[in-house]
Image (tube, rainbow, N blue to C red; front, side, top):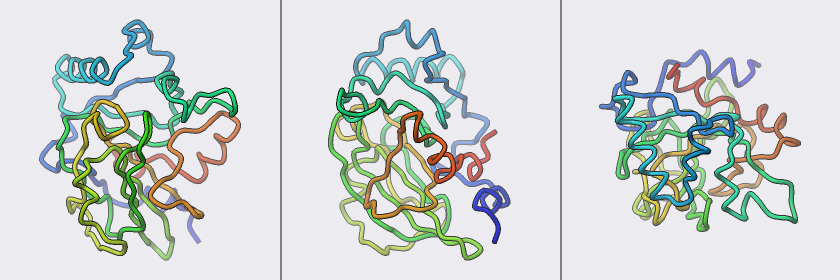
Length: 225
């Protein structure tokens, strides 16, 4: 059987946000601890961060900023979900983020069905989240879409089917999405175990090898670069 990464890499490119926005209007965004400009900004609130994102988009004449897979970030330190004395700090992002305006359509990456959904409430958490189940070449895997609007999960049912490119949701704003600037966290999950409507999107260094194996680079599907 082929490894999942080979299966994903062989598929044609897909989009997970507004089909009308061409990839030529995407721009990479570095949110890692190595971004000295970002560190200097001291973005303590979602409002500050949203201003930074949209200023960055304007500066780069783009509509979408993307990036973040296996990126070490300091922005999680404001949330006890990731940063507390009882557990190792989680600060390595294991999905890919697409940053753009609230209300933007979120699309199914591939044909699939709803595995689970949940409103993951809390500072720094996903907010409304949808997980789709897929099967390609007899290999089952999942895609996670986090930081959605509340309306995105109001009328969902487990098992609902979607075709590639169907609208499944919309981006939420800071009041519902875990207190972030609007974006979608997109993640591929090979083995989901018992998780339901949720799955770790940030890990610590000790567990990184496991998550690289179980959550391959989303750009294998999106092929933005």
